Amino acid sequence: MKRTGIIASLLVGIGLLVGCQSKTQKTDAQSEEKPNVVIIYMDDLGYGDMGAYGATELKTPNFDKLAEGGVRFTDGHATSATCTPSRYGLLTGVYPWRNDQAKILPGTAPLIIDTAQVTIPKIFKEKGYHTGIVGKWHLGLGTGVVDWNEHVKPGPNEVGFDDAYIMAATQDRVPTVYIDNGYVDGLDKNDPIEIDYQNNFEGQPTGKENPELCTYQMWHHGHNNTIINGIPRIGYMKGGEAARWTDVDMADHFLAKAQAYVKAHKNQPFFLVYTMQQPHVPRTPHPRFEGTSGMGPRGDVIVEADWCLGEFVKTLEEEGVLENTLIIFSSDNGPVLNDGYYDDAVEKLGDHKPAGALRGGKYSLFQAGTRVPFITYWKGKIQPKVSDALVCQVDILASLAELVGSDAQTMDSEPLLDVMMGNSDEGRQSLILEATSRTAMRSGNWALIPPYKGAKINTQVNIELGNEMEWQLYDLSSDISQQKNVADENPEILEELIAEFERIRGKEYSNVQNLELK
Image (cartoon, rainbow, N blue to C red; front, top):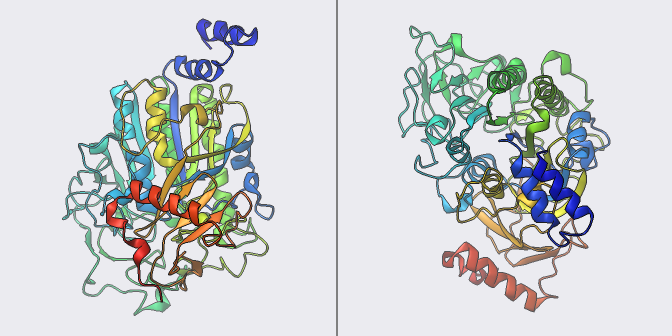
């Protein structure tokens, strides 16, 4: 801590700055010489999937160490109950429902972030930081027609990242290759890649027609196209044999890239987004983690991810930058068990509850869709605490802008640096949440879900979606599991919240309460 920070702390201690503690502590955080920032982003990790959030059957010592040494938020949210929208909200500070392209994308989708848009990495670049991303992207690449054998752009580099080592979409979608700053890593130009999401290539086996070739995992629903490494995928792919990833090595591969980034840039301020693929499907733990959880591949890859986090934090410490690095840890949406493959996620679950006490999961408007682990950690700067403040990943942009002294703003991101540093418990007052193009709202301890037509349960994944033909209102202070709809008992509150929802969400939703109820 600099001299000014010490003096300010002493003044607070003797009462000369009574009432100004929050402002002083924020200044201390900002006074550190260009702190590094790392966002560690999980994929489908549920609220109850780590020990610090109540898991007893699943051991996550490194996740828990981070939570116990920082601020563990009990009411932290992704913007969406699915991946692409959440990643959009995180990087841009804009609600994903404002962008009709922010939905689960195929591997061939164009980039959905406007290259002129404010993003977190752009903010850091403007302040002299080196910026990098390692891991899952899934925000689109190119402008609609991609030649995977040439430079693929625009992509992460064009929205603010100096270095980008990514997979284009998800582990279960083609192309199954790594992309290094716009170029397919390890590509043999004599074996060009061809990708199509509508039509198969002549002579290429598929999971649907050749189930005998699904030697690693069998598809359950939706994942029955091109088979790679014994795993059927979404979409069709031909060529690029030398560049194809090995699924069981993916966690190690991305970890090594993240560690290498830290080592390469430890002598300059850096901003890194490290996006793990675990526990998204297909769940392919390295052999040394197989069977370690007792819950099948889903549990094993969570154990694997926990180890990866521990190794990454160890690298920060060994390279001498841990005490000058703010780490933000969260997940892109809530949990799902069977999400397309037969992998024993349901059969071997035991007493483990991936969503904890929350209702719903991935794809759902109930709390388990977006309420996820959310942790901020800064050794020596953030004092351990548990915070019940309502926070959202969309607020990370404004909060980090405040940290580095940037005036960058977006319409939806709220500056909550004091909250994320553990100096305040005054979080958001309201929050719009999204799930597969449907939206709901949190306001204080109230959870409001508008009427929606459609199935109540996604039977493929066995998750309640939140669809009812009436307004739903839940008091989370006494009913965190959302078991009792109290809309009829609180007509005035319901009316106020509907008005607030319409004000934020827009008049295009003003007729939602007028859906014909049958």
